[in-house]
Length: 292
Length: 218
Image (cartoon, rainbow over all chains, first blue to last red; front, side):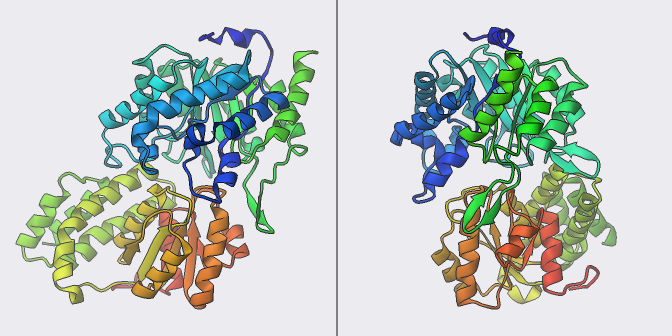
């Protein structure tokens, strides 16, 4: 496919929910790198992909959020970047069949110069290597972006490899002055940067839940005509009886999902704490809109 | 000489990590003591950075730059303090670690630098720290406060277990928590002594817990 032509086929698209939260819950027992599961327990990764497809995802993404050599190094896997990324694409493709596959690409996990010791060139190398393994997806979903510098490096590293469509998704926090990324970028600055970087889709992910993401998307919408993507968290987790509970449960998000999809968001899924049940909720509303 | 300390403080505020070392050498050559440079220059600067961050005048990037400048200046002063430990007075010792099954450390490292910048001794025992390792190091270091970091929601459970286990061995120790998924409510639930929403807040929290006023001289 390798183009965003698919976006014309439906009014709205359902993305998948969290991969990380589901894997980490299992990895709690023994300490493992979430991305390494594509090598050591591919069936588990496939089961999660399939669960999302069965729940109604039109798009799923690869288990590669932290599959850059800096994050992998923390698990002694820095030389496995290509292997993990390319295997992750194979697994997602084998479950997706005719559905769309996006590549999940997250922050480096270490601070880039001048804030930290990683040079821009080293960061570029890490993403260039990751990009090589992700060549067979339909688009690149760069997510949880906090720093524009990092976004620039990631995008240039991918474009140095190939010209796949790029979605850029930032994470914002609510402050007294409005929504800002941790690195101090406002929503408006983010939109301007995304336009400057000539991305194909713009959005927000993670954060503090569907309601906040809805506010952020509406701000973005005032400033650009780019297709909009949202993958919010299921709220801020609390612990009850030694279990992690996300307050925005699948039944509680129905109203905000409807507002979301009617307000012009093109692609809606979930981030931390969302499950196939959340995706079923989104699918229910998406079907109403797509088939009305 | 006063001007030199003001300059050093300004280098901290503007995050001038590349040349702050020259100024520190100059200050040492001008017979300022390491203690005077730390307190009158570095810590003064860090205090301003903290205040500006709190009122939203600056954001994390500026704080990171200041932290880096502080770190490079401290790398020159630390050998002097090590040679004569008695020269340096500490506001308290803080032991920091990211809990088991979590390897995130950007936030924890920044908390460490901000605490150092405010006159605390910091012992950082790293990431993926097991309960046993916490207990062992608390015994060895006898810190005034233990700071736990977690980035993943799944490792919040380890935070709870770690707090419970530390309390079993050291019932009176102050334990504070921080990290993306945690908040004050969670800190209350797991009976932590406090929660810091960011590195600046962590400093305020440690000062409050150890009854250190903002204007107290060391």
